[in-house]
Amino acid sequence: MTAGRPATTASALSGRVREIVRKGDSLTAEGIPYDSATLVGDVKSQIAKRDLAGAITTVRRAEALLDKTLRDWIWLKELLARVDELRDLARKSGVDLEVVDQRVGNARQTLLTLPLSEGSLEKAAASASLALVVLNDTLPKFYTQESQQLARSIHDARERGEDVRESGVRLAQLLQAFREGRLAEIGQRFIDLRRAVTRIPRAPAVPPKGLKREEEEILLEARNLARRLNRMKYRARDAQGAARLMTQVRAALSEDRRYGSPEEELEELWGEVDRLARERTDALADPPTVADGEPLTSEPSSSEPAVSYSSSRRSRRPPT
Image (cartoon, rainbow, N blue to C red; front, side, top):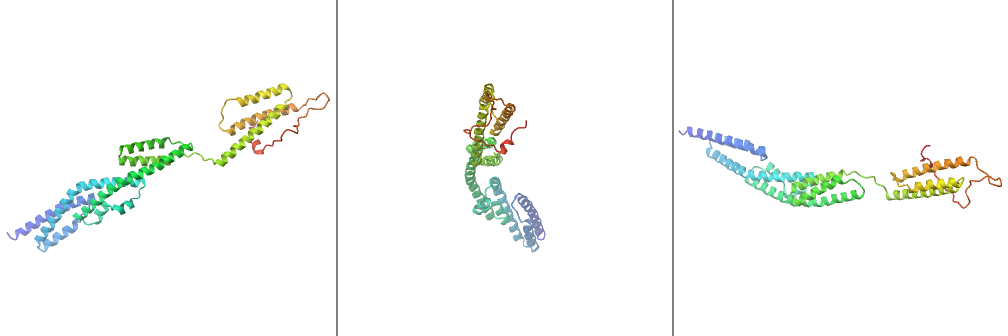
């Protein structure tokens, strides 16, 4: 009887140890490492030394720790999942998580580094709870400040004439998420808005000085053109030709049509001037004579200002 009881007790302890190892492996798979090898080695060593009381005490302590860990893990796992969700959202949003970890610690890192005990579980739970509070307080402030910057960027882009329809829709969705107060939805809408703002098609930038200089050149060109047309009108061969030229000029000035740019409009005017110049050249090929026998001259009067035209403007005339 006496020899059979230790054998029976050792067999029962081995069965209990196998159950502990099974539960420990399941915890390890879920993120709480359990040193099953150390437990098995300690129990076998105590049984080999015939220290059954010590082996039983070791097994009971391991069973009590695993039972408490399994009970606490039910709510601790949910807490860690919530923290992981917010940490992932913060990482995608550009929040520096190292500062958060230095302030409140990392619960999962605590479970991985410290031996499993009631103290390590309590420390991990406290760290996770504090991280959840900090993230719930930090992220809304971060999204509010960054959203203001993005909204200002959208406003500036719209003032530059850029297409901000997509980013405007994303901004409206983010504001709706703010009103509903769902942090996860706010984070996702913020990420979508930031991506839309980076995809705004940029309008070509026109330097103010260059734009003003271009306007001055166009006005100067228009003045020179008006002077040339006026001189051609007064040099017409007869009154009928002058009236026809005046009618054409007035029709061109009063025509209600739009051009793609001022340069295209000037190109059309240059073409009209070239046509009128060819007609004038043909008319002067055989100049009429006046009553006293002197040919009619086409030289401009001394009172007319001389107007010069650059080669760049002449090169832009359309081919005939």
